[in-house]
Amino acid sequence: MADTKLWTRIAVALAAVGALALVVGCPPSKPKGSKRPAAASDIAVAAEKTYVPPGDLDEYYMFSSGGHSGQVYVYGIPSMRHITTIPVFAPYSGTGYGFDDESKAMLGNLTWGDVHHPALSETGGDYDGRWLFVNEMNGRVARIDLRDFKTRQIIGPVPNISGNHGSTFITPNSEYILMSSRFSIPIPKGKAVSIDRYASEYKGVAAGIKVDPKTGQMSLGWQVLLPPFDWDLGDAGKKLSEGWFFLTCYNSERATGKLEVTASQRDRDYIAAIDWRLAEKAAAEGKGELVGGVKVLDPKTVPGLVYLLPCGKSPHGVDVSPDGKYVVGSGKLQGVTTAFNFEKVLTAIKNKDFAGEEDGIPVLKYESIKDAEVPVGLGPLHTQFGPDGMAYTSLFVDSALAKWKLGTWEVLDKVPMSYSTGHLAAAEGDTVSPDGKWLVGLNKLSHGRHLPVGPSQPESSQLVDISGDKMKLVYDAFTEPEPHYAQIIKADKLKPIEVYPREENKHPLAIWDVKDAGVTRKGNEVLAKVVVVRSSMTPALIEVNEGDTVKVALTNIEQTTDELHGFGLLDYNINVVLDPGETKTVTFKADKPGVFPYYCTNFCSALHQEMQGYLVVKPR
Ligand code: CUK
Ligand code: CUA
Image (tube, rainbow, N blue to C red; front, side):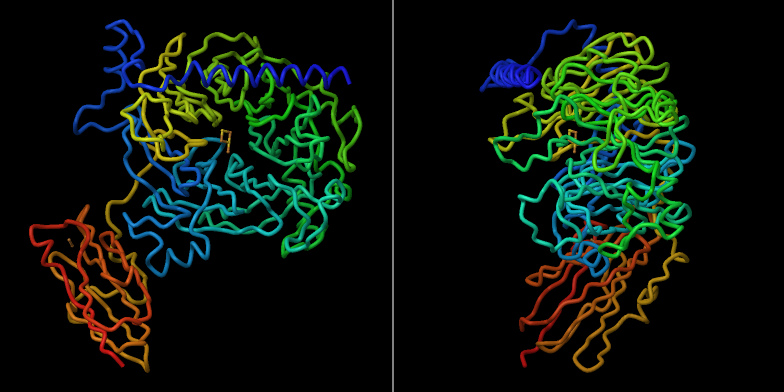
């Protein structure tokens, strides 16, 4: 009871800090007031550190989640220049994504996604530069091939998962991607069970999505049943903790929005530690039950599968240190972040040193597994790492980043952020060998540090130089909505192609010579094979009848860097973009009679305007 009162007081204090921050931190008229005093030499150093002269290249790629824009944005570091947008879960007319048959099929019926956590594929716990995986809240995960920066697979909506926030977190050799239900529901989906039976019949679910080590192809894997605690964020163990997945929850109260029970009542929620190798083995041995088409394991019948680590109030992020020894969990309603010692976790498991259980899952004793509560500041969310035991934690309420040291637990430095950082990303900062050097605060608010653009303001990402003892804010960038997590990889680990080599194009409708181009008909189905090359589209006339189903197969036969061509068809909502060497198809019903010009949308040569043709739809 006393605890609850204490908590109420803290909550009030935090709310006041938040309110105060809003008042102090966002003067209504900017940008003049936003110029912070800085010594001229500081400015010169920051400028020199971040300036990438014309023609020079950045040292790192940053892949930043685009939140509910559904996309991934690519920035160069240290310049913070936006280099490209990778469309993933929403159509993007800039690259014709979501218009051609292939990407349309991948998107399915959903035209939006809420992207939170990119995960670069790993080998031996280091980024290997092969693929980028990203989650989105509607239960899906996408794989982007870093050879061509294209979305190549979308898996899901995965059965039984509701609100896929806890992904993508990848194992050190890219064996699995973790996924979890943020919102517990009865499973399989489609059962309408009264919310009064939440505590017993609503289920938390964690999923291991299997990744093919050769192709990156994802498949459903297995799932683990968890109590309905609202499973939020995760990380995979590495080195000392390899073989485990960690997942936070913020509602061990089993609150359902009713006033008398809230998700913040308890002083501790949990981090679940899941033995994924055991899950794999149990599923292979035929344990578990098929629910919604996936093997679901109940921890009650697979002893040792899950343990619960008590963690400070409503934890958000959980991050594993480069050596795998520390599991750092931050209660977002606290002023400290907790470092659990995984050696102690293993000892406690061995000795069955438990404090109790939740739905049959053993709960470890907080005091026997934690090494330190580090007083980083208010509202700690996420932690990244540098070399030499350095750790960096984002503070949402304090609107700052804290630097501290693993082992000594000293807080060494803080740098204010504008404003209210959610995630932070350090250069290779979640691998077994972080680089140090650069840290980016991915802020939830920008608070006027940009030319005013009306009420719909951008988010901001700020670059911090972490190469010295003190952290130095060196650059403000304004980002597309809404950056959650980002990962930063050394540029030389990626070797993207510049054209699709002709010999690799296995599309059945690809053609490479204008003499193969033309229009054929089977019943009321029309196929137009079109060659696209500077500076013509062949054929330049496609004649069909009203009501025909028309498939246009376009091949860009160029083998020259940057020679993209587009196919915009007026009045039919068709916009396809073809990279050099690429073939795409678009299928539509010719339901409007008339003459409809098509033309190249990418300015490709002096005769770009001449790349055009006509679709003639003859009335019935
Ligand atoms: S979340 Cu957005 S600040 Cu989706 Cu990882 Cu923590
Ligand atoms: Cu092809 Cu413009």
